[in-house]
Image 1: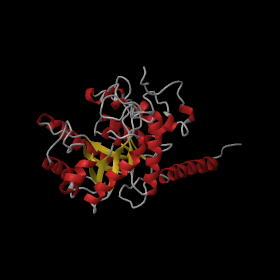
Image 2: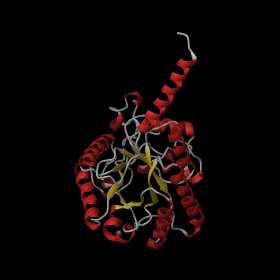
Image 3: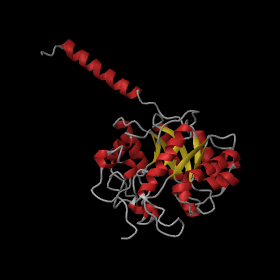
Amino acid sequence: MKTTPLTMFILIIFSFASLECSAQSFKKANLLSATWPGYAICYSGYRNGQDPREQTYPTQEQILEDLKILEKHWQIIRTYGSDQHSRDVLEVIRRENIHLSVMLGIWLNGDSSKVAENEAQINTGIELANQYSDIVCAVNVGNEIMIYWSDHRMSEEQAIQYVRRVKKAVTVPVTVADDFAFWREHGRTLANELDFVAMHTYPIWGGRDIDNAMAVTIEHYESVKNALPDKKIIISEAGWATYTVGKLHAPRAGDESKQKRYFNELMTWSKQNNVPVFFFEAFDEPWKGSGTEGHWGVFSVDRKAKPVMQGLYPALMPDGPTSPGYDE
């Protein structure tokens, strides 16, 4: 067929219309909505040889691979620091038209030597939240900065000052993510400063095994809801490791089949009760070590599907085990 100027014009108009429809088909998640906003997951893309402490970050090509995996099933991801990794994530989402919203993290540390780093995180977080306001659905100011066992704990006054600075400078909801026990027992003053409360719950760390994991999760959620009845509560971390080391767990609690069961039960409860839940986490992170902390992903570090994901991702089936065995 001969391409006339009129035909070319029509093709160009159609292309622009298609792009516009594609962009409009994605609506940023609303974590404050009374209805369930979609599946959510915690994302850090650090692979072998990469470490946020050393500022060795995933490449944008690696991030794109990850996000194309995640957008097939999830609607929202959570990042942890306002650093090069989060900047790259947001840039890739926009450039490649990835259909994912982001709860953007700002990493804080209460140590007096970390003031400059905190300032950099706050300033970058504000910048990214405003530059990518079409993608960022909330800003999380600090992760586990209040609970008594944190190694980067800060004072409530410090946390409130940082929250107020961010709230004044951004247009999206602002929260702090912390352990359920803090919110339940000491969280009222800080919660009053927030648009919603983000809580963590890990039955596996409390020595519980899979048979009562969901009951404990619901108990933790309800205890925070009862303590803060006027606040929107989301679960910003809940997960199940596929391998555990140490005496803080039930014997051999870490297990791929247990992760699959907990994930399925938790996601069903989340949707039925309109409670946003960020499952921890997307991919195993080797920089956290070879013990429990390195085996929370629903995908291995090689981007292979663990049993929990194999039904959804048959193309990512592993050739062998995706977690260590206890008898090795």
